[in-house]
Length: 505
Figure: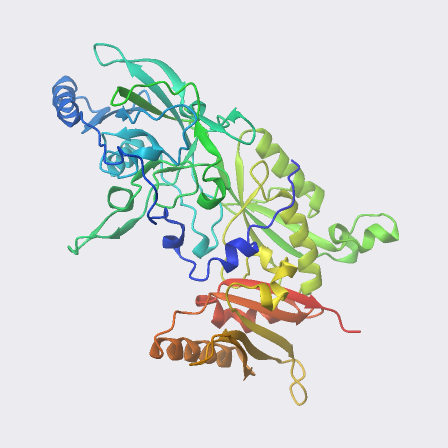
C-alpha cells in the first residue's frame, strides 16, 4: 500500500476556488466551437415508450421487478437494464461524458444518451439493494466520492431487444497519456443531490434531472452525477485527455442496453468507515528501540483505530499495527474511509509529522480521508504549499492570521492579528496599488466579528465575497487544541485553512 505523496489542497484547488462551492465544479457552460450537428438529440422516444408499456405488461405482479420508463430492474438478479441510444462519436474524439440523460445538450461529447431519467436510475439501484453514498464536494472538504461500486457494461440489442455481447463501459474510452482504456474498477454510486426547482416551483428536484450535463455515469468528479469515478479526476485536469476508443463502434442513434450491477453481489461492502485517534503515548507503552526511534513520531505517539461501531481494530496502539489493518482491507477489495482525530494536547509540530504520514497513503490505492469532524482541521491544513507565501503570485487575496501567545497577565491565552494584503484600483490610475488592512483579534469571537464585518463591507460596496481561505501563521510549539479553539468560530465560513509553522529561535 504505497502511494505517491500529493496535495489535494493545492494552489489550483484552493486559490482558483475563490468562491469554492459545489457549483464551482459543475461542468463549464462557456461557449465553445460546437460541431455542426450540436443540436442532435436521441430520436427513439416513441420506441422507448412502447418498450416501457410492453415491460409493464410482461412483469405485471412481479414483486422483484421494477419497471420504469427506459429501464427494468431485477431485485433477485441484482441487475438494472437501461435503454440507451448511441451518440455516434467517432474514434479519437474527445469524450467528456459517458452516459447522459436524453434531455442533455452535451451529446456532442458523450457516448450514450439514456432513455431513463437519472432519478429513475437512482431509484432502480436502490430497488436492487444498493444505498447511495456521498458525492465529491470540495466545498465541504470531501475530496473522495464515497459509496459502493457499480459495474457498468454496454450491450447491443438483438432483434428481440435482448442485450448481447456486453462490454465494460470503461473499454470505450482511451487515456491519451497511457494509450490504454480506463481501468475497469467500476463507478461509485454516490447519487446526485436535491436542488430547488429551476422553474421556480415549490419543492426540490433531483439535480441530475435538471442540471446539465444531466449525468448518469461520469468521467470526472461531478457532484451532480448518479455514478462517479472512484479516483481524483477534476474536470479541468482530465478534459481533452480522454478520447473515444476503437471498441466504441455503435452507429449514431443505435439502441443499446446499459447493464448496471453491484460490484459485490454477495452482500460484501467495499466502503469501511474507520476513525484514527492520534495521541501521545506513555513512555512505558513505547516499544524498546534505539534512542532515535524512541524520539520518532511512530514511537512517541499512540494510534487508536476503531470501526463505525467503535470496535478497536488493532491490539497495539502503534503505527505499524494501523498500517497493517489498512493493508489487509485494501487487499480484500475494500476502501478505508478514514476520519482523523488529533488529541488537543499534541503540539502542532507533532500533528504535522503525522499528517505527512497520512499524505503518503491518502490515494486511490490507499486510504481515503474523510472531511474533518467538529473541532478538527482537515489534515492537509498542516501541510501548506509554500507557494502560497508569495503574495505577488496569488490569484486571490486570502486573510492572513498571525497567532501568538498573549502577553501578561494572561500568558496562556492566544491572541491574533488579521491581515489582508490586496491589490486595489484607484479611479484614474491604471495600475493597481498595494493595500494592507490589519485588525487585532484578541479572541476567537473577535476573529469572527472581523470576518463578518469584512463580508458586510464587501456586500455594501458591491464587491464579490472574499475567498473562504485562511493562511495561519503559528509557532510549532502551540498545541493543536489551542489553535483549533481559536479558529473554530471562523471555520463556518473559512474552512480552507493552511497552517504555516515557525520555531522560536
